[in-house]
Length: 466
Ligand SMILES: [Zn+2]
Image 1: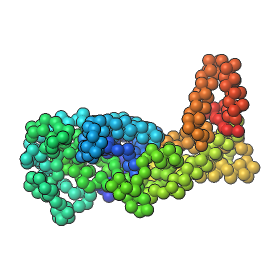
Image 2 (image 1 turned 30 degrees about the horizontal axis):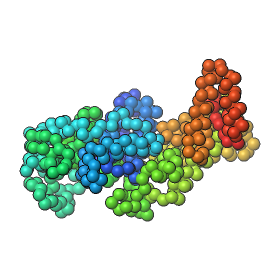
Image 3 (image 1 turned 135 degrees about the horizontal axis):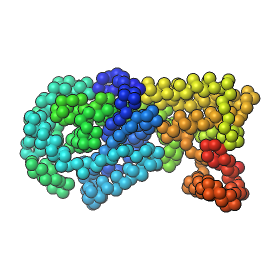
Image 4 (image 1 turned 135 degrees about the vertical axis):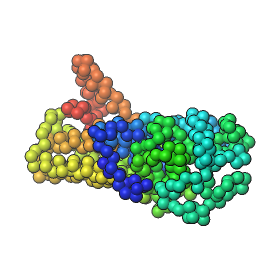
């Protein structure tokens, strides 16, 4: 698989799973001071799908996504609310996990929280000082940018460019305006930890370096995040990690494009944002995922109700096809007819080929839509409709790593109705396994009386609304 890496400014090959089974992947996680907005959700969906696709290819992915629970924004929010930074961080960590679930993302292998790694951060900063890459000034610790010759290589900025934009804030005792903070001396009322330089707290750039090294080692296979993190966050991560290890910090750097609203970046500070949970509530999990996957991950994507509505319709369209196809199959395994098999095979190859080539998810979705269309054309031309079930089965299998098209019933039911019907369907399957056909049939008949029809297929029970 080839992936476009920001550092190389071109595609980099990920060795096949036969050569390299374990892939260590680090994605910068949220700062937990508020609910995430739908723009924040883009990397959490895109890289969730990349991880799941790699797993489906046979890799063993160790996926780390940190929780930044020490930050100015958390302190400010606590001050506004009259609560404590710990309470704010704890609450929005819980809300974030709830949002991941709503977005249909698989939980990361590890979700380290910065607070649990402060000792390790102090150790890393001490090591940087000992090696001459950092210095103490008035209880703060700064990284000396000029001590690391590779500085600017990720963002492509020269020290002269950077110097033109650099400023020394009031109260900072930097030796050079380019230098960045590793440790901040405590101000009154802020969370603080004891350190060799007095009470204080670590800076954000050090948090990610320490958590990724602790869980994935000195060189990550993939480091990912939004392209707004390239500078200064990831540039500063590279400087610390590589100054210490002398090895590449990450083999592949992935940066997703921003979500925009009428061409402007969606952000809390501009006020043009929508909370992820509200968008999911309005359009559904799969529509949100489809919306993101229908655009190449490196490109900007414009948010609008129309675009989400279009994604919702596309998802519904595929589900309608799946429901019809699986009913037409009548619960029997049917082989793909010869005249359809060639076309479907080509589309399956396109699906994989597109994902292998820089994770082109729009191409992969087009291949799935192509399979739906091929099935419809075949049926419209008088082909044996039972063959459609074989296409449906292939679509579901391909789409599983995308987190799409795995639902076994129709959408659009109010509240929890869908989940309750799912529960009854599972219960009936359990009763059948126990050969309690009397109760199993009673469930089917009572659901039928309510307009919910069950059909048993080799892939499990499907249900439709009459
Ligand atoms: Zn980070």
